[in-house]
Image (cartoon, rainbow, N blue to C red; front, side, top):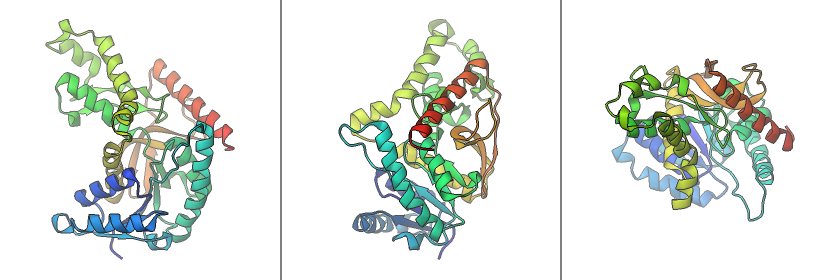
Amino acid sequence: MLKPKVSIIGCGNVGMRYAYALMIKGNAREITLVDYDIKKAEGEAMDLSHGAPYTNPVNVVAGTYKDISGSDLVVITAGKKQKPGQTRVDLLKDNIDLFKSIIPEIIKYAPDAILVIASNPVDILTYAAYKISGKKSSKVIGSGTLLDSARFRYEIARHCNIDSRSIHAYILGEHGDSEFPVWSKATLGGVNIDSYCMLCNNKSDCDHKAKLDEIFINVKNSAYKIIEKKGETSYGIGLALVRITQAILQNENAVLPVSVLIEDFCGVEDVYLSLPSVINAEGIRQVQKIEFNEIEKKSFVESATVLKQLLKEVGF
């Protein structure tokens, strides 16, 4: 067995975009693919393996749950699709039932692995994984709003003509309709966005508030627009999952906005939501209790309320 070892549960578009990006980035020495359709998993493993001469050394294999033994990280991308006429809650119950079959197998064969959940709705399913697994919350992480925050940085970068890597800005809360932008902490090269806009050469031709509102709306509607045009989203989340993987396997202590268990913050507890969190080889080292303004605090509480209600409806 080669180390580090990453196992991926679910060989759909998201799982395979992640596997492809992970292989190119060279973060893992062994990648194990598990899917209910074993032939598809085998085909994907073969296809990926044929690119091995052009990447860092990596062994890509297809297998069953017993083959995930020794994994440092298990990433779940599996999920059921919504059937015609099926409600969101019914779909969620189906996916929780799916997790009730997946999680015990992971715990049986890879009990020490950190779990990363990408299946949607990610906050609810990460909470379900936490409860079903019995693992410490620090070892169960949801992809959360990491992709939303990347979209946010991209939109700000495009408007301001600044490299998106020089922008620090978060979308937090639910990965979904109740997510919110943290404008009070958004910076471009260390300069708060409000101050930056006042210094911009185009400030006389730009309606500052309207533009910021437009940027967030674009972020919030991104997934809907992509799905409308191509049927699914997978490249962005694939790269986002690689970023989490890198932070864990390289023990980075990186701060990323991921879905974590909230314990007594802004009056919210016992729910998974996204907050900036320090990630290393142990999983979540620390959740950053970011200082919100009043609007952001209210949005965070409202986001938690939405998810709490959903958890109640599905029996948690």
